[in-house]
Length: 258
Image 1: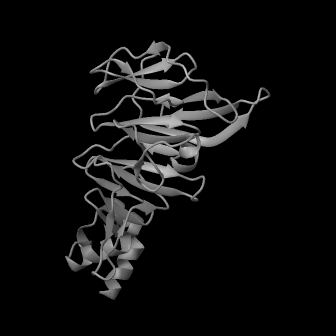
Image 2: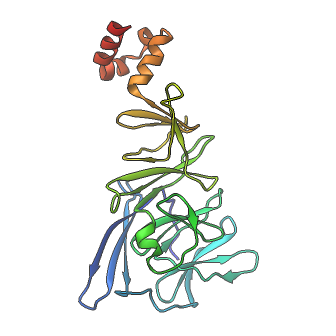
Image 3: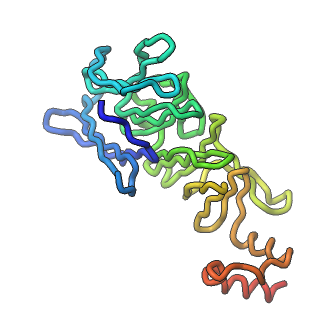
């Protein structure tokens, strides 16, 4: 089996083409917008999964975090468990190693998801659930998932734009969606897990979106509130030149108000 590259993100466009032989053609993209971006096309029967095979034709060179990725004779991907060397029954269009947190990123039925070592997958509600049917994945899993961020609070950006007009969220290593509390007085503070947009956290634990900054520890601060915090504590005069170019007019307005 070709050596599995590091997966920083996995996306499926949701485009499923019906070929003349009535099979579906699904495209998965590994590491979108990066130098090593790779497209993988998978052919599937029109209304079902490929006929099941337990014959391993390719396998990874070694076990990683207790499991080895293999490919069966029908083209599907699966896992062999290290402690008993058993081929497990779960099948995917594309699959990668389990990480140190006990999650693996996989694709199936035109969707992608994190799975745990119980082989539950992350649905659009932010729950780890059992797969119940062929359509569990297409209607309930995600369109894009990124690897966990570095730092003390690792988070994965997950996204779906097919059914929810741009729904992003952050998945934590505790198997739950991260809740973010808005800065402000108690009546204005509330927790949210889902966003219209999203961005990757850096190693310091910050993610800068168009209108706000997220802290991996669990807070969302709008730029306007951030300016107010700086103003209240006398920090506006020390703001960097780069930030002054971007937010200079707002800072001037805030200074007039205070």
